[in-house]
Length: 422
Ligand SMILES: [Zn+2]
Image (cartoon, rainbow, N blue to C red):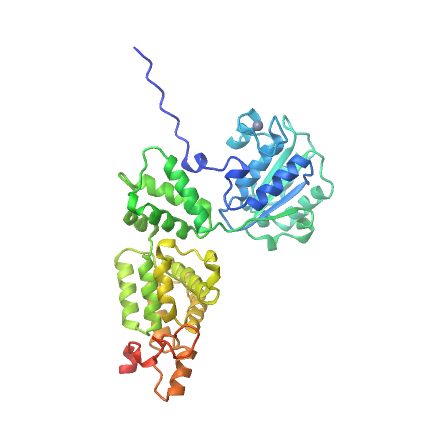
């Protein structure tokens, strides 16, 4: 009888899709190129600082650099990925590549222990490489210990520091590092990568007509972080039995339908408190997370402001392309002053939500205050009303370029809010 074939070992999704070469790291080409050049020219410093938002490829890049430097057929601009050094670094089991999460090693003694081994030669590889994640979390004493090492670095030792908060790193440390700034990854790049992954995951399919919208929703939610986007895709796949659908995606992300965001801004513009309260009720009823809604609204208002003030910079927004036309069509009826005011106030709301116990009430108060109490009333509409001698209607739509020459500029044409009719 034939031996039963062993099941293919399951490799965790995140590890399966972790970038393996410089080319795999999405959205950071400027850094990949510099690092390749440094490795091939042999001009590699003792310490690197990788800074940037979370989930954009800093630690992945650090591991790839470690492999490039230590590959048996290297140092090489592209590590081979198959030699024992490359494989053990990828698996996190290499003796000479030491990964430290500073968030859990803030005690001076622990850092001292780690640095005590710095003076010893690498056990089998070319370089001993310390990858310190979230390095800004180290204590002052740990930084002092580190500084002593950086002042006289042993020849075969490299440090790669990663941080989301470079301001907290002492200048004395920063000035001794080669500095690399990682960028937030564009929604378009994230969609492309997710598309690549989805097409190669065995036995996983998306509803064809919804495929693009699903990937855009995942990318938009991740706010420029590739790791978060991949984690969400992984969750979606494991939660879905048949084809991936947009409905399941929205449910997973607690996603706010795009339309609700636009509805919300329109209701603000019209001073329509009743509509806003209705929207909040719908969100709560559908199980959406209000904190997430506020975050999405903030991002949406930011995108509207970019489209409004710098229309040629469409690329800076994260708006899904399938939705762009509708948003652009709505733009002329939205008032710049209102958007600025809304954006500003949303920051305060987002802060308050973090510690609030009754989030729904807080969000309701927020919208009532901004509409019924009249703070949403724009300067434009007040000025126009003064000019025409009519009583100002709250938050009247503003035509493009200001003034009332084109349609939609009549303050009296906007829906009368409840408070004005009282
Ligand atoms: Zn290799």
